[in-house]
Picture 1 (cartoon, rainbow, N blue to C red):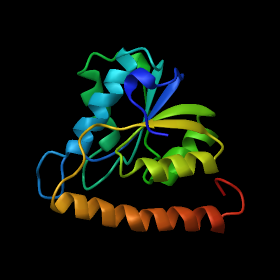
Picture 2 (picture 1 turned 180 degrees about the vertical axis):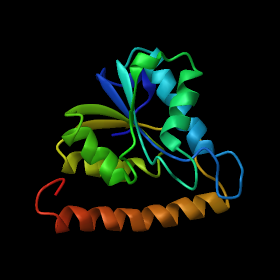
Picture 3 (picture 1 turned 60 degrees about the horizontal axis):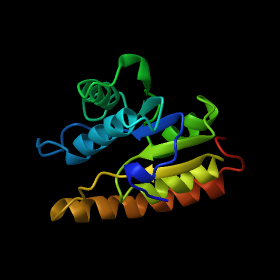
Picture 4 (picture 1 turned 90 degrees about the horizontal axis):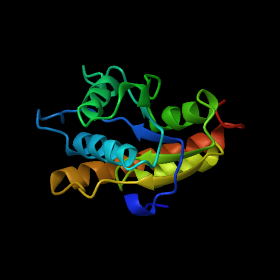
Length: 170
């Protein structure tokens, strides 16, 4: 389920899924800005007690987790409300670790609308009750085609992973 801030249930944690700050062509990644801004807004609105930022520590030379943490901190979210997880090099791992490492059973997902269905599917697979909130900006033009194509294959892999692995997380 994807909702707006006012409609979000209160949860202890929001899982902010990582993305690089800069696109491969060197331009600013609007998904990075959207996710970090939205994460700060839901924290400041009192919807969560802390933010778990999960991503890749070396995504094309960027530490997306620390970059996201830095950007969210600049939006007046206190450091003690920010938890980082460097093991989320795939959505599968971010969600698995949220359940198995951080023992989360309910959370708010902060990601983009094209990515939310897969992330929610994986939350259900790992027994996590989740709702997603997405920035209003969607990719346009070439980026829309790129993300939709990438997401199509990522969804196939997610389904394969859930079938091929006998128990969640193994």
